[in-house]
Each structure stands twice: as C-alpha cells, then as structure tokens.
Length: 371
Image (tube, rainbow, N blue to C red):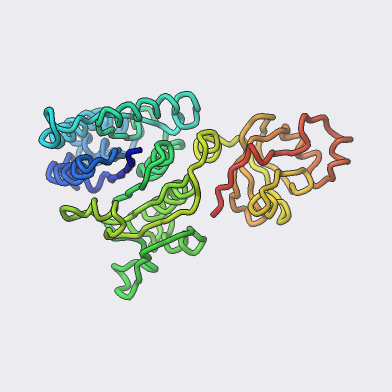
C-alpha cells in the first residue's frame, strides 16, 4: 500500500505580514510537496491562511477580529489560496501538472460519523487518482468555541483518519527545546520524544505563555492526538529545498515524536477524538489503574462524582483525582443513576437502580487518551 504523508503549513508561512498571499513561499512549498508526490507518496496538505489571504482583498486594513468579518475574509481568501496552489502545482507532474482538490471541514464534521466517513471516502478516491487534497477548516461556518487551534488539531485528526505514515507539522522553530532558544542559547533540542509527559507540555508552554514558542503547545497537543492514533509526528522547519524529504526520511530539522501505538479502529478514533462528550466522570486511583493499566471496565465503586446531564449511549470524559483527563467512553447509565450509585458495590447498585449493564463504561466502549 502506498504511504500517505500529511503536511500541515501555517498561515504565517504562506502569507505576508501586511495580508495577502506570499506566492514565493507557496511556490517553495509546492516544489517540496511535488517532490514527495513524484517519489510515489500519497500527499495530503492541511493548510491555514484563508483569513490572512483575504482580509486585504476585501478592504480591511488589518486582520479582522469580529467573527462575521473573519468569515467574510475567509470566504474571499479560500478562493485566492486555492488559485495560488493550483497555479503553483501546474508545472509539476504529467498531463498539465499535479491536480489539487479543496476539502473544507469543521469539528462538527468529525463528530458526525457518517459525514467524516464520507469525507474519508472522498479523500481516498482523490489520492487514488493521484490528486493532492488540500484540507482547511471551513472558517465561513465554524464557530469560535468549536474551531480548531491553528489547524494543528485538524492535521492530527486528518492524519489519524487516513492512517498516515507520518504527520509533518511545519513551524518557524527547528523542533522542541528544553527552553526558548531565542532567550537561552544553552537550550537543548529534543531530537526524539516517545511519550508526551507533563514535563514536555510544560516546556511547550500555554496560550500566551512566555515559554511557548510559535504556538508550540498546540502542536504538541496535536502530536499527542496523532501518536495516540498510531501516527508518528515531525515538528520542525522546512526552509531549504529538500528539507521536506529529509523530514519524511527521519533526518529533518526538528523533533520526531515516535509512537508504539497501533492505529485505532474507526469506531475508537471517533470515540476518542471526534465525539462530543456530554459530561464528566471523576474516578479514584483504583479505577484509574483499572482503566489505564488493567484494561478493565469502569464500575460504580470507583466513581467519586460527575458533572453534566448525560444519558445512556452518550459519550463522557473520565478524569482522575488530579482532574487530568484519562479518556472517553460510551456510558450505560444516566447521570442521575451514576450519582446515585457512585462508590457503591455491585450488589448495592443492583438494589438501587435498573440498568442493562453493571459497567458504567464497558472496556469495549472505552479509549484511553492519557499517555
């Protein structure tokens, strides 16, 4: 089977500071992507840049802040961005260049199993036809509370969806460092990361953090999602001809996030990364060990408390005593039932409530998200 490579490029790499498309950069990345395509890979690009490409054309002097203004700018910018990609790829390959296709997705598309399956079938057909799909968030309809973060998360979800050989997330930094190398010249780069620990997340910083570099936190979070789905990740720079091929080959200018996980089934991918949790369940240490280490189901005895109003068949997120997310599962109880039997033995549960299964979450309906 032909290997699929997913490459994510951010808006700062594709547009100018004043707004509009940087065609020189588009041409450079097209050359890099075309080289992979011509080497036989199935290449899928996740791009940002629609708002940045369109706001000047629509008449805004600076990048807009209001939702409807950003959506209008994106509507203009999407067309300009795709036109630029079409022109850039026209000189590569045979029969008039490498053909490109636009796919616009939202988080809601991923949460709907039928819609995301249809999207996957479309992508697979395009790749089979040797087209280069270009995926972006549908900014004209996405709402702020459901938007992806700089398309990093989108690229991870797409990588898992197509079972990519590797996800390449490009940034202005040549990987993850122990500290910001622009402030501390003695900072050391991580060449390989096999597990995204809390220490790694702290190094990456948070939104607006002085420690975070170039939105590195969102990229590390995306790497965690991809790794959990069995997809290894590269985060780094591609600035010279041939750099993208080096990144794919394992010797690029950046940090490699390797994984021993196997690709999740489509059902568990949906459960872990696309579903919309309707509540939270907080468990004790015993239940945490049973879920993470023992491969066991979640029983009422290990539950401390809950949040939210959920019903049997809904997806809920499970947290430990430190309020760290452990994973997600399909719940067999209504919220009031879980609250009524939390901490009780199986025998006592049977006396108090009527449920089809004693397990609050069965292990077959569970996916672990904690590293």
